[in-house]
Image (cartoon, rainbow, N blue to C red; front, side):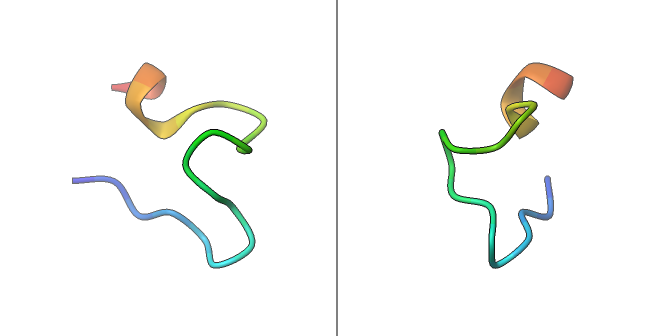
Length: 21
């Protein structure tokens, strides 16, 4: 599970959480 900050939308993150794995 990844925690995405409120200001960070799924595909608007500088580094995509799912790519960090």
